Amino acid sequence: MNIIDKIESEQLKEAPVDFNVGDSVKVHTLVREGNKERVQIFAGLIIGMSGGSVNQSFTVRKISYGEGVERVFAFHSPRIEKVEVVSRGKVRRAKLNYLRERVGKRALLVKPADKK
Image (cartoon, rainbow, N blue to C red):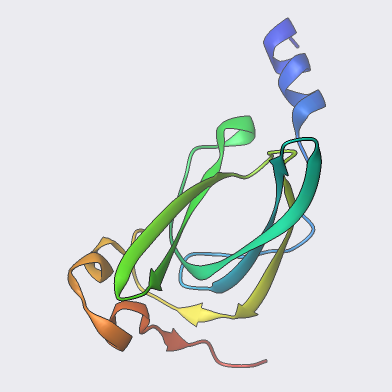
């Protein structure tokens, strides 16, 4: 094991929740304002995941006041407190970029996954 792999393995954070593309999630992030820290929630639909190991990230999209807002989160970031899965979705694509052209409720429309 070389030195880079050793450093990367120390920075890996254990994934508490298993989520995938098409899931509706709430991402709890720590936000620092001045000398205070608080938790801010970003709720939306996961439209893509990329990278691997330490560089893994996922993109969450939501509609805010009629405008689409996307945010990319680093999977192993210390700023992410937790990721809550609101609902699971069944999709047939790895990236849901086609949702960007949609407007209104259709912009977040994904088939619900069958419950097991």
